[in-house]
Length: 69
Figure 1 (tube, rainbow, N blue to C red):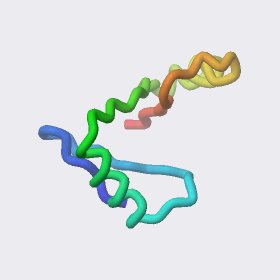
Figure 2 (figure 1 turned 135 degrees about the horizontal axis):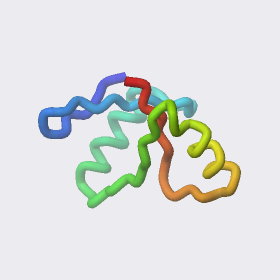
Figure 3 (figure 1 turned 120 degrees about the vertical axis):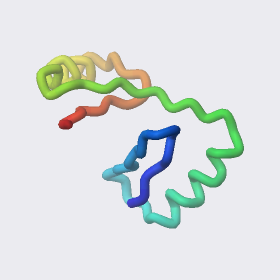
């Protein structure tokens, strides 16, 4: 799947949903026209348990990302 260039950083889009690359392309085309502000929080591997506890407690707004780099 292709990434999005945001300034000097390349962001990869990864999903476990049943969608195609064409679906993503169409979505990004529409999203570019509206003030879309996705919410997410990054967690380090050391914070993985905290992330899981927040999921279990339903303390979720947006998405959670486990950064492995």
